Picture 1 (tube, rainbow, N blue to C red):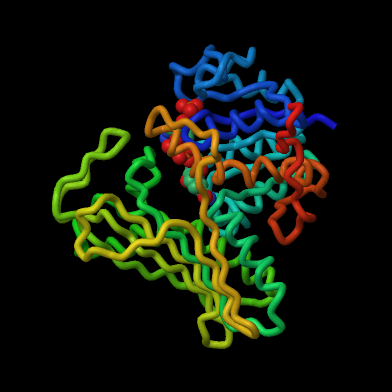
Picture 2: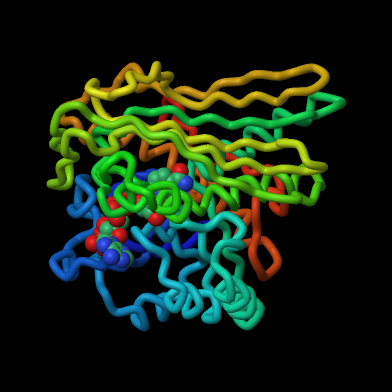
Length: 352
Ligand SMILES: NC(=O)c1ccc[n+]([C@@H]2O[C@H](COP(=O)([O-])OP(=O)(O)OC[C@H]3O[C@@H](n4cnc5c(N)ncnc54)[C@H](OP(=O)(O)O)[C@@H]3O)[C@@H](O)[C@H]2O)c1
């Protein structure tokens, strides 16, 4: 079966989704939504730095839904619940990287999505790399211990080259260190990590008594100029170490931690890892890491080429889920609901 795919926006992650769709023999790009007026009417391949794909971006949602896609790959900066309701109630499945894992941080909007899914017979699934795939990795890892005491997932990256100030400033980057409401800003901006904790708890079959967010900050000692035309002034936040913790029986049982830094001028100078570390504390304790590197034939001509590697692992969990999501019963689907997700259509053989 070939799946008819509608791409929603072509930003950092969306571009990488389009690359993956164009190269996957199971997926056919039939349309693309553009949020920026200057992208409307342009060929999607051109927008994404590959050759023309013969599909032009549009902001006409009715026209896009009339194409009867099997699935929308939804990658906008911010999720628009009205748009999602429109797609789902029209019977179009959605896979998304945009602020959605279980939908629990959405309040009443979660019920609207479920109702739209029921009305249209459609399914919505959300995952990036973190939150998303990395929690699945932790859940799978926990399956080889006969007793689990605590699961921790740590992401550590220097994100200097990530060009999305609109998603990073709400996390707390760029604010003066010591600003009293900084912890509240970070808690709100990283709120999707609450859903990551809930996903792991659900996989363990446990109810949590409490979920808490704690954060520590490092500031830059020099002004930092970053992609996307923004500057972090000296004395302002250029490192965030945020920990979302789930408690059961009065004990911390789950931690989802993000440690993101920008540049070499941090105070304190945090030691940095690169990648993801999963630790399942129990009998036995299992530690696994997930890192990534370019393929041997990789030629980086620009900084963007490097950035694309990190964005590939953000885009792909949603793309890989498409066949399972299309086949799933209507409603919200998480990793805990879907069968094993198979990497179909990506193998490059010698004759390909
Ligand atoms: N879970 C994970 O691992 C993970 C990691 C990274 C990012 N993400 C999430 O993935 C999503 C996409 O990230 P990104 O870095 O690709 O974002 P981005 O490039 O900053 O923005 C994506 C697109 O959103 C559209 N857009 C711009 N301003 C908007 C606004 N005010 N309201 C709605 N849409 C707007 C634009 O669409 P056009 O292209 O049509 O102009 C833009 O290209 C975000 O929600 C981000 O938080 C998840």
